[in-house]
Length: 460
Image 1 (cartoon, one colour):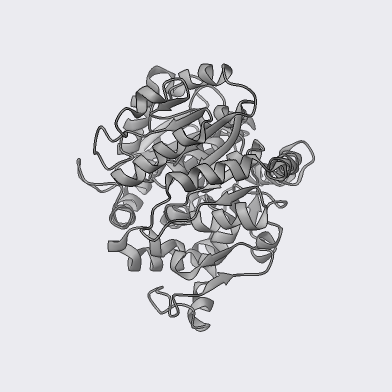
Image 2 (cartoon, one colour):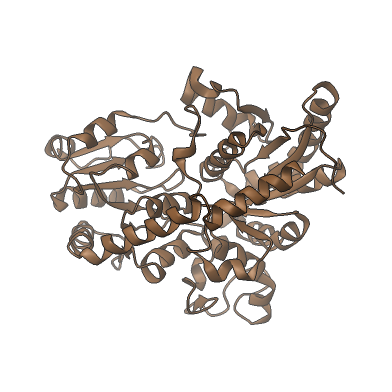
């Protein structure tokens, strides 16, 4: 049942899954909706709300268009929120009740009543809460549409004998591909198998449940475009491609980052020659052991190219002083390391030559939107599928090969950098892809039209 809206500015409650890669695109989408006259309340967990406040200080809500609110996540202080299974379970047990109380309170006391819930598909229980309160609901998919189709295909994968009832591959040597024009993934790299070994079964059944959520939502928005994934969108007509969500649309300074951005790297990039810098960033989750971290450092040094490397405080599981001996002194004139970077601005910078990336969907989309070729270093979840898109389908990047120890060596890094940057076809193809997705979001493009139709539906 949907509610007739009395106000010309509907009030949308946006609910991201509490991970950086989910908060960030939904924040971008919130800014785009705010520009269309919607009032937005953005509901982080208490824990992440505090992280964003700490990262942004007074600038956090300067334009007043995206109002930050928070709800408890069900975990105690000090519990490890990187354990995805444990976190997801706690969320689904505690947050529905908290969310319902929050909406009821707002709608009892404020003139601007919440008229729509826009929830991350990984927070699908929020759609049930909306239905219970008679509020319309849409969902948001933070991965590629092909990854979503793969989740929706789980019953068929079981029937076809590819995986068992708990998602484990029956033949570990198979590659899986939905069709010849879609990315292939090794069956041992299905998203649920490389998330959190203690919670694989739970995550698998959680992902299997997404079919019900897609059926339940009025619409599912996806940060992708028809041109990037034409076949995927024909398979799920209810999923609307409205991307790439562009960082350039941002209002004020609020980006939903959990770490303070070090903008000094932009001034450093200004001093580098055009198309010369290797940008290295692995998102918010990837962690390295000491040996692999050092091989990466030495590989960047060996490349003899300028590099900008994002080294999160927790990238090596809390171990300190991990750089190879003398490395920082030797690369002082060659490289710059920062704790967190304004990635949209970095990738748009003319000095960037390529992107060594974990292939998270946001990073993939941002790299594509800026015409930057990739070197792929996937870590977990859907990143192996995205790597296949980048290297096999769109052909805008290369994969690294691991040695018999499972290590990407310094020589491999140097070789692949030379191979990627020594062949003009990768850059040419990346620029072509950038022009294609830019047309999608420009006036009259497919994503632009679909987004406008969605906003009209919200206001109707």
